[in-house]
Length: 328
Image (tube, rainbow, N blue to C red; front, side, top):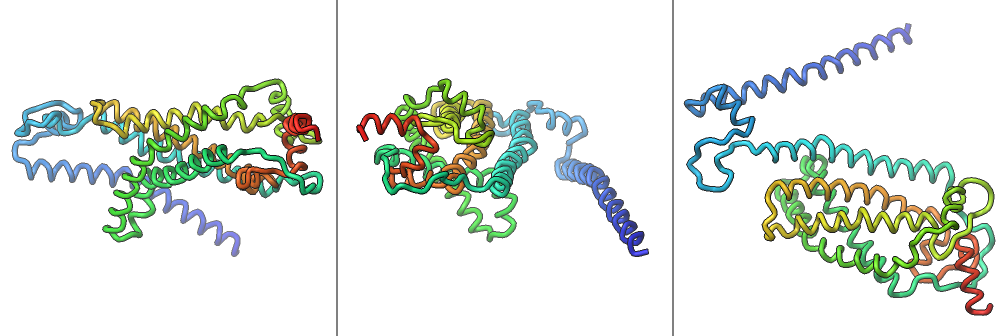
């Protein structure tokens, strides 16, 4: 009896949920109808034809001399808003959430990639001070720009309802200004990084074998790699292609004083948002591998040096070249 009772309760809740979902379009239509009726009453002379023309973006007479003021609803702006709210925002949330979920599941199932042999206590310089300065410069700016950009895109839904209006408004103004002013500095860092590390990131047959072994996940033993492995090179070229897309689109938005029309700004806003979300989703994997995902990896970018055991396991060809060069 309890089982049947619980099943009946579930069915009742499902029916209520379905009823609510079915009622939403009706409610929306009713609200739209009320809005139109209020408009007709408050603006004498308005007719259904007038309302239809306004929705369709038809130009008409206006008392303002401002450009575009003769059109009540800008169709391009409406399309941009729909793309942003109905596609980019939910799509970005899925991409970011899916990336974090995949990383979490991978860590729970596979765990950290440990060193196969004990540490030797002997270290090799992997990243120079200049390399590390470039990396952390770009990384810190990337995190700040990511947080402010996500605030601009999403904070309306989860911060505005819980913060006092003055605090919310203050943070959004600050986030916008921080994002705008740090963007060009980030662009400079990305360009320097690309030039500095380009010579290490051309693919070869060693990388192909590395990919076939899944970076060490498939089969036994860790695949050979040079100074950078195939995965690191993929990340570099993603920074080149997607990162430069973020940079260029961001600069177009940062300097509207060069005379870009409204439609161009709307297009580049879409490009900037999509490229940024893709880069952030991929960056989660890069951060994971370089920190808790691989034992000893973070030490290299923190101090510049890695243990010989780590070098032999993850970048054996580079390690052999270093030992041959030093004669040790």
